[in-house]
Image (tube, rainbow, N blue to C red; front, side, top):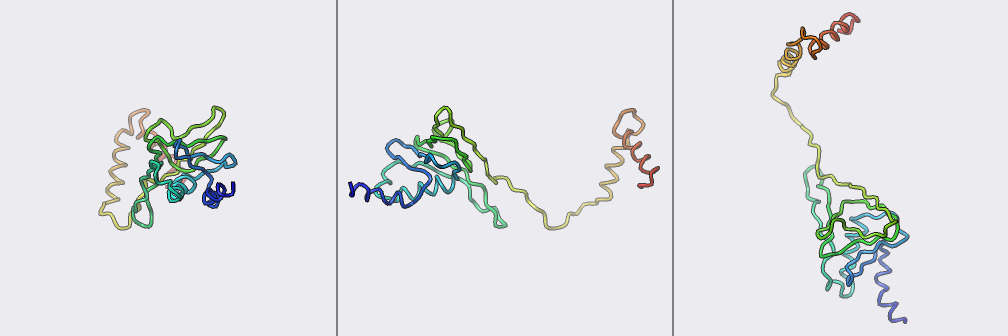
Length: 177
């Protein structure tokens, strides 16, 4: 009995929120866990688990894309995939923080019927790009062209130009212009 406990001691000392079952290809979320990070608690834990004993003999459980530098100290968001028919097994309700899909199934999760999964999609694949510089644009000419376009139908009842004309008349009357 002591030998068996010492054999698995490495696993327990990692303090992972998940357990890996290589034979059945399951990533089992511990029942007491209600918040799981895909990156930390699943992907990083899997990489540590593979290094223990002979766990590398099992087919890989996960792959990832993203994390590439997009400049300015920012990176593209990570997306994870279960592969080789691995599934994430949840016994209880759990919030999954991260983006994860399956290469083999419609969902990477296996859950009892009464369990609920709340998945937070937290990806920064699309970044807003700032502009540091000057534009060679005639802003005055552009503004005049926009006003001319809008006011072209100022005499057409119900048109944007007519409504804008009335609004400008009221603004002028109130001393706002």
